Amino acid sequence: MIDPVRLSRARFRAWHRGTREADYMIGGFFDRYHGDWDEADLAWFESLLEEDDVDVMAWALRTQAVPDRFAGPQMAAMQQLDYVEI
Image (cartoon, rainbow, N blue to C red):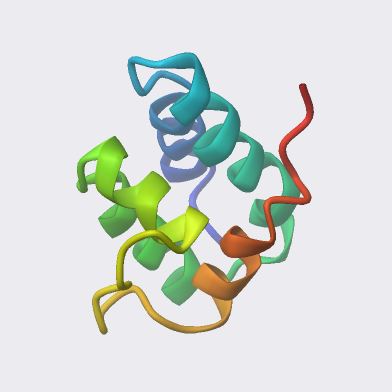
């Protein structure tokens, strides 16, 4: 079971990025997918939270190449952008 404190911290960080666009993208992704995550998935997301919003958004929008360390099924889900509710 994933530590609820880690999840709470990740949710806060996902929804308090500094710009509304990043909040919707990163926070919305967290809200949609975190319920299915295991430890490795949460660790991936926590690493993603360390990156600059501009880069994360560019990867999600496919305007910049995704670094190998973030490539995979979670980034593919993020690139769908079907979780952004505005």
